[in-house]
Length: 115
Length: 114
Image 1 (cartoon, each protein chain N blue to C red):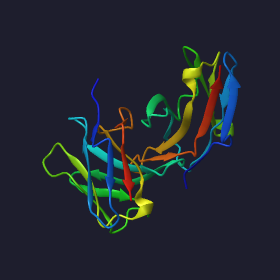
Image 2: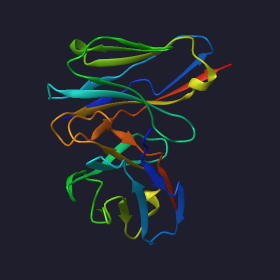
Image 3: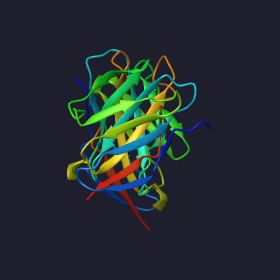
């Protein structure tokens, strides 16, 4: 069965600190996709990144970077030099390629960046 | 950039009433989804829809719920006889065929049952 775990319920950092949000997933499928979404207080889901299971290259986009490690079933997300606008709930999600492609979301990590 | 549009953004309804949440998926997309997020909790899959029929549904999606694509552009979620515990944010999503590339969520409808 699919499962996504985000062990950190809440994290608080001071502006300009780096922060890493953890995501561990479980799946029986060999082909799957991993995602990160940001949910600001306004409630919408903002797409951040999509990764397929065959691409273990780490990715950097501005202050954001992602570390995908199949060996530990982890897909961690790092924000460098955090800003107050980064305050939000962050969800990691898994989509198995062969089963309808509906998403399984993790419980989310609430990040508070303090000025 | 194409968007999935959901209306209304916020709906308040009385317990026991029927409510219809509306979504306009991206026009060339083939697969449609509804998700639910109870306040402070994770986003949960409700149902997927393809080729004018339900392709998969979760245990949350019981007889109280139904989905429809009435006119080729709208995709609706109907909740019959709403309960207090149906209060949640409901997200519509759509994607083209093939992989989950292009999977797009709408901005959600916040349903409050009083």
